[in-house]
Figure 1 (tube, rainbow, N blue to C red):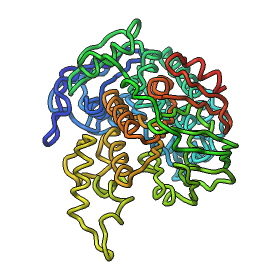
Figure 2 (cartoon, rainbow, N blue to C red):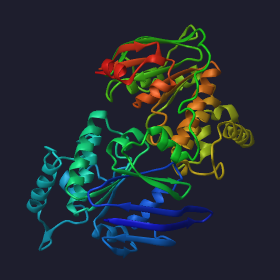
Figure 3 (cartoon, one colour):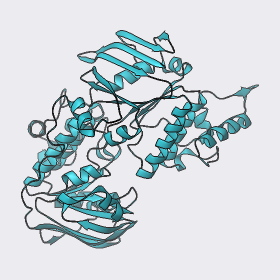
Length: 489
């Protein structure tokens, strides 16, 4: 037994984050920790890494009871966490990042030769043919993640905690990462794997621990466990359907995109009907997001036409698209969708200030009333309208963006990776919301890398490859993931 956590309790003002948390990790085991947002996973990780101290309970590492006062103390015991948001400094080299805070000096001078030698060895161990002098900003997301793993190996990590490690990776990069994790586990490293992607959890994990409402519900072998059974353990109820039932037959054509080109997108054309959910599938880099940004006017198009309700649109930028009734919920909601340091209400109002202003003055009471109306309708969970957007869960951040676009009466809503980083309960709420918007006659464009989501939510599927539409599936009820992948590659 490498790690044993027993009867942890941790409370914050007004919140009982962990009521009864327990976990065991064996040497060389890949152990998944799953649960909805708010289940207590993040707090448990922060206790293991010395960010928080528990109110009650024990943490035993190698048979010795530990109570870490800082992440440095946890590092000394070989416990390292790699978070979804990387902690690398983009402007520095690989070597500088690997040894940051642990530089080796002699007579006050850095020993670059020693660092480069150790960096080359650990990079080779992970199969990375990169020079230690390479600037981190030039690396791909998957390469940056492997640099984070390399840094953990340099401190002789024996317990590696990975939080949403595949969120921004392509399927091919996921396969490579899983191969490396299996090699590390074979070398005796215990890996704690946290993810909302349950298919990947079932593929990589030896055992799975489920947390719900601050309590460890169970620990089971991953072998033989179904996705459905795992979801039911996470949400605490029987799961009848993972996706809401499809709505009525779509109406007349509302949106037409003709010969759209720009950047890597080439001659893309399609139409969409009122109340229709069109799913866009394809590998990462196929051009789906770039297509959406062209329709929204975020990137200048070279050619093509966008027609809404029979009226050609002149979309020179996002402001034109918004005024024409087109909106985009970006895949990067934190970087491009929300002003994280601003309040929830300010984020809601940012695109519709003219609705409540007269002679340059805002009608704050009307703004607040509209926000409250959307908050209730979308069931956005808030402490107060002044709560900062960065403190909301992923699902509530997405709902906040939806509220913003509903206030400007958007008729075409583009969802780019709408459920990335949100838990299964919040996913179902988002699916219900998308279905409800479609039932109002709006056009929904759904871009997703999760093929079960595309198959479960779309009325029609368009597959992109190398900036073009490579195939179309109209009979979605009988479609398969293999059929989509054949068109994507």
